[in-house]
Length: 247
Image (cartoon, rainbow, N blue to C red; front, side, top):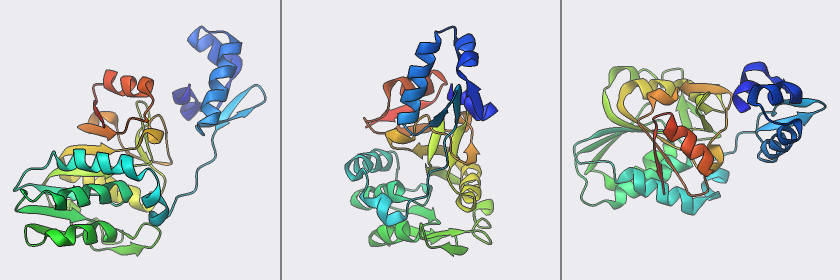
């Protein structure tokens, strides 16, 4: 239903009933459930795309789902080996990855590229075991992130082993998406610059399609999410041949 809505921007109850071979009563119930999850808005006779959610400042995101992000960060950090070159995206979840990496005293000679000032500061205690490289660029205060002009130049000239990518939504049809355009462009360059692409998304971001597309599901090596994720959405992603780690 969400895929049909993303394509048409408005769907009728009758059309969905015919499309899926279910009763209109069932369709209305499903649409109400999706509305409660903030994924669409019910209107007379059907549903329309939900209004975009405002972007939360970094500090506000930092306090939300802190325990889930800690577990996800540790799971992500466990995938890194000494000598790797990694890219860490901006965000509170990738900041948790940075903290978990610093805590791994066994890691050495790791080169970390990031466009996040907060992420870089989290990594700083691991110097000189780690080399921390900021992309440069124009400072975006809301997320303390570096964006174009100039932020993408360095990413076009490197070949990293792994990128740890944050997002605002991941969906089988819509792929990986983000809420704002300036950071989306940098994230797309990060995807192109890394051999292994690992997306980190808390359970509330599964099945969500945000404004700016970053990449398709086929471009992602692994998704790390938490136990709040809808099991049906996790199954759908796995059936699309995406490796999903629930922690």
